[in-house]
Length: 549
Ligand SMILES: Nc1ncnc2c1ncn2[C@@H]1O[C@H](COP(=O)(O)OP(=O)(O)OP(=O)(O)O)[C@@H](O)[C@H]1O
Image (tube, rainbow, N blue to C red):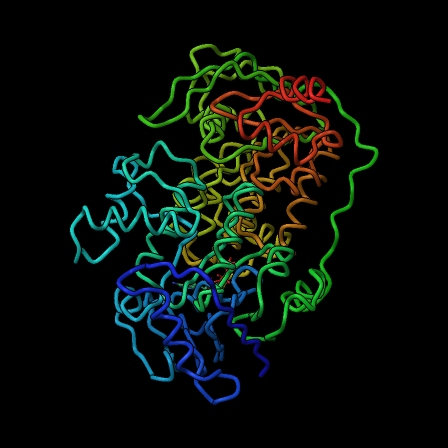
């Protein structure tokens, strides 16, 4: 098997955890290069297998992780990536096979044992308490062996050393998503990990924040730490990673140097075939306004929510309007106001298909022909412990024929599941499993598919391809374009500017509860959008530029 062992030496020696990095480096220096000396890798899995009933989520996986490498873990939704890292981090027990740490076989009883060995993990979903300060949140995740004062000082030191600025005294609710992720990373680094697992870390970041994260990861690598990096963004993997292991259907299919591959060749290895390109939507005709928002202002629904202020836009049939913005700037509140989760006193603030709907419930709005796909998949988009067919019934019964004279038509609900499964390639172990048993990306495909297949007149969708692999993302984007071509009005909120550039006709930006005027997509450069996302006014920036020129 090929591996690429790159160990660079940093010039400044930060102190983290209870060791200095110099000591850490001495340790590495005293061990001859693994490649030449027969030293074992930092972490090795041999034949690692995890089964759920008859289903093999991981099928005999061998992977080697070396110090000083950034190792990508790639694969389609449901390929087995999360299962593998959960086993390495002690969250689940493998059914067969071994994990070796520095050559020794280990059996992990749980994550705290993994952490004590030097394995850290930064999850995609943060586990932070909004009403506690940064320092209090960090303290909760550590072993409590040092005083709060010492811990706070170390927190500041680590955050400074790695260029991850954090104010220990601020409460989490005041922070942006990027800052919250910084807390998770700093918390992991304070445990001085030799090996850090990151699960789709850039999914929630702006392009600028992602660039800053890459600098941090390069630094960790230069210090001799190993990083296992799960991502669906292949260009990012090519730029950052030294090695990539590709899983397909629970098996390892390849280990390669991603810098020598193209995004297309990596995608091919993941999928086993070519990925279809999204066809540009030429010749789309816009019709009458199907979704109109008139001067919508709304007080926050929860203590730390965002107040929506004077939001107005008009969306015609055949059109896709993109809403960009850093998460937490009112996108969730706007979704709640559009979907009817939050009602407005003034019915005219939200008009669906010409009907004032601001005061109507979600079921009424669905009856008018609207469909809604929330960002949060479990709990909000689906009931985790219910079967997919039961979930389809929950959102579908308002508009389609799944209930006859008060009786549920089981065949019809199953048919909906089958259609979504087939059209959007939802991978699952059986025909109608519980929602919670699907991998994150497959659940997302199911929810988006279920709503698109209802052929809505108005579709409001948040982060349609979040956590979805490249092949499935192309299918979803194409389906959104097709829906617009068929005459629907589509509102897409996304943090992925490339996605919006690919499918939206116009892009507006949310900042602090306000929505900018939409820009035609061809004029919406990354720079302009970046400025709006940071709260600048384009007019002021342009005036300043003109004055300076
Ligand atoms: N507790 C469980 N019970 C049954 N099946 C499960 C369970 N956990 C995972 N699976 C199945 O194992 C397979 C692999 O899931 P896993 O979450 O590892 O995929 P993944 O590669 O991380 O996908 P994604 O990119 O969508 O997050 C999926 O088909 C999933 O449905």
